[in-house]
Image (cartoon, rainbow, N blue to C red; front, side):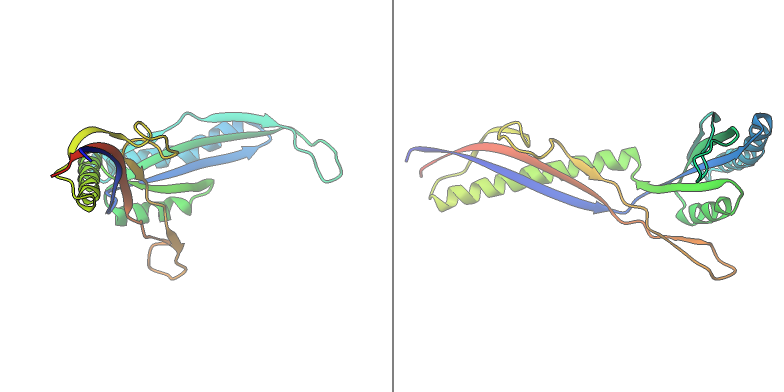
Length: 224
């Protein structure tokens, strides 16, 4: 046995506390008069936009956005199969990014009590700088795992030190179903209602964000 080719896979993952919370809300209203619906959606959405702009100016919100008003209409049907009068609908979707999760909790609690507001979801993420750093660290650790695994195989065969030949994201050396490159699984939004008085209506409990990486590597090793 003069030379042996060893192909292995290395994996690693890290769990990191989220740094940003992104709230997604929508403001909706409906009515039979289109003009009244347009005025009402403006009266409902404008105070929220102004509040977010003020929070952004005070550095309480790192980023926020608001879509244009969406308008549509249809004629609903009643239980007897009769088509009713035309109904107009309007909606505006907004997102706001917070780094202070207590402030996020209070803000969502406040807007949730407003007429026409629906909380569509809360998501959690890392800042771009942290995400890039963690992804690089996790990928490097996955490579080290692959080297250690290959050397363990070589040692079991009484071979010398392994010499790297190829390394790639999963699926590029060996056919696999897994996706290539580091993967980041965003934290889910966990929140619970609080019916007690004097406190926020929502309590946020973000899970850690999981960053994982897997590589495939091919080595060669010679007998001693």
